[in-house]
Each structure stands twice: as structure tokens, then as C-alpha cells.
Length: 447
Image 1 (spheres, rainbow, N blue to C red):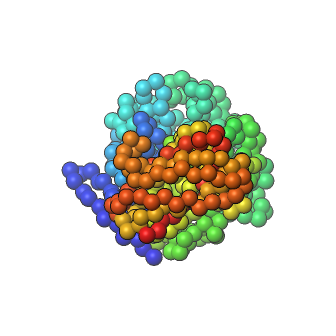
Image 2: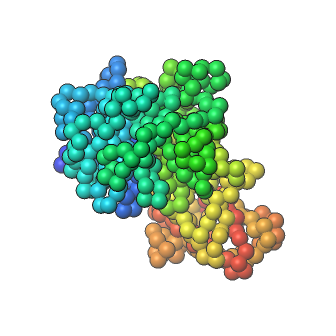
Image 3: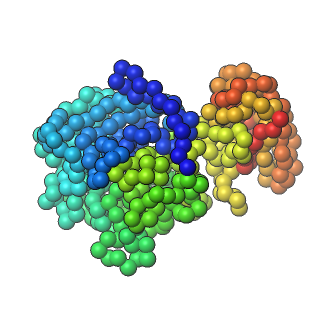
């Protein structure tokens, strides 16, 4: 089922307002996304498939798009190979990542599946210059191929991770354009991948596409949608799972797919913004072509044991909500004073301070509804005040209610609200009047 999109083009810059959220930028071939948050703005650094008519990978440049809300995206910068040591006519502009240090941005790019270069700029979108005039990672550096780089930052230090089948990691020097150490091989115990789902393919145990992120003190090394965990950045890592499974897909999003199935080709990145975690990744279900891929974004929720739950893949995407359906509380866009909690049926949110808030922008088709139903629970009981604001915590009050809940007793909290528009930006302000935690599982609307 193809989704319908509308777009506006002006002054050579493309800006997309989506009727559906996934793909985030439709019909443009934006893929291999690495998303970073700079100055409260999301930037996606990505490769670019040239045409839906291509019969092989033709990637002539690298792109940067930005968004204030993960909904509206604007093309900001293009890096052409002719402006690097690669020169005119290069057509294998593979995966890329970026880092920020001391006022400068360092954009690392794959020279096909062989080497890695770097350009430097004074802003997240350039302009860019090539400080080395040659590769940073050369093809004779390690036994693997030095491409598909990812940059990980911790305590002011930056590390570069790269490779295929086997991954290597090295700390970057202060100048960010040289290595501070010899790359070290990352050990992964019991690895799996799209070519090795049963553990028997020793020649192709993982994939390319490495990425590293950190959550709650643990390191996550991923390759596409597969991942492993470690207590140490350098490893060893223990393989855990894939974040994509057959049950991930909404109707119309499970096919077409890659020759080795829907687990293949999911190059992407994990990122956090406003206390919410996301996974941005490649998809070809809407384009129908492995040579003209799209970028999707899904929510990421972590289980109590630190493993990541199976993600949802659909056209609604993130920061986008349909008032005709139940909305899961953990799928917020912004939140403070809350934590996610694993439950028997999935996830919920719980308050962690006396005053907290949740933000759900782009709530669509809410115009004909006048009641908000909140599925709530208080383990220890308590009294609470919930207020719904329009557009901000200082905005118009749409409805408010004080409630008392008994211990371990579920309650549907119903709030009457004023007539509102077809699309609204809703803020939920929650106050613990008795210092007890409130759990919210989901909410819905009625007339």
C-alpha cells in the first residue's frame, strides 16, 4: 500500500510536509541515515541513491537534511566527490557519519566499500573542506575493508568504528583527522546477521553497517537491525537479537524486500532526543527497489534487562499520532520527569517527580472528539492533577482534572476538553499531589 505525500519546492531547497511520516523524505533516495541532534535540531547525514530506474547502486553525492520535529525536513547541504580527494565522476558515495568538537564539524564518508575520508566545516551543514586531500582510513590499515564508519563520543573523546564481517575501533586524535591508536578488532560472541541467521556461516557472521550507542551504562554495537551488548566500549560484545521481526510490520510495509529477506539492508543509527530513543534505518517497501531506498524512523524502547524491544514499522512513524486509534503513552516526542516501564503488555510511562510533562505533537483527526480517556494505574495509590495544554506548557488549557486512585487499581481517567482543531500539539502536565507515582499506559479520544 503506497502512502500519499505532498511536497513543496522553492529556491532549489526541498522542504517536505508529510501526510504520512514514513518514509521521512519520500521519493528522494535518501538512505544509510545517521541522525544527530545539534542545537535542538535533528540532522540526518546520509547517502543518496540517484534514481528509481537504477539497476545497480549509483550514489553520486552525500546529503544533509534537517528537521525541528522529525516531521518537516529541509535539504541543507550536498557534498560532491569533486570537492574531496575523490574527484569528478565518483559514483560510490557510501555511508557517512559526523562528529562535533571545539566548534567544528567533522563529516566522515565511505569511498565505496574500500576507504574513508573526512571533510571539516564550521556548521552542521558546512561549507566543507578536505583537510587531508587523501583518505583517513586506507585500505591496508586492517584485514577488513575500511568503510561504513560510525563515530561514537564519550567524555569528550571520539572513536571511529568501521568494517565488514569483522569490526575495528580506534580513538581519534584531538585534531579529529588522525588516529590516536592502532585500530583494535571488536570481538562479538555468537554473532548473527542477515546471511548467518542460524550461526553456521563463518565467512559472513555479521554484515557491514556498524554503529555504536550507549544506554544506561551499556554499549550497543549494531550492524543494521542486529545488535550486541557490552560493559566495555572495546568489547567483547555478546550478541542479543534483531530489533526487527516479522511482527514489526504494518500491512503494506513487509514487502518488497532484499534477496536475503527483511533483515538485510537495514543500515541505520540509534539516537536520543528529548528523552526519547529512535532508530533511523533503510527501507525499500515503498520504493520497491533495492537501488532506490528510503529512510524510516521508529521508536526504540528498552526492556528491564537492557535489551531493545521489537520496533514497529509503519507509515505513521514518530512524532505523529492518529486520534482515531489508541496512542501508546511511551511514544511521546518530549518528556521530563518520567521514565519508561516494561509491562506485561509492552511499555508504559511512570512519573518520577512531583511535576512532569509529556508532549504529543501532530495529533491528527482530533477535531470531532471532546473527551480524552487515559488508561492509568498507581501502584501505591495517590492523588494527581492532570492538565492538557495546547502548543506549550504556557498555552491554552484544553482540560484539567484531579483524580484519586486506589493502590494497584487501574482507572480510566476521562477529561472533557474544549473544541479543538483537526491537528493539535498536546502537552500533558501531571502533578503528584501525594508524591506517589502515576503510570499511564495509553490514551484515546471519544465524542
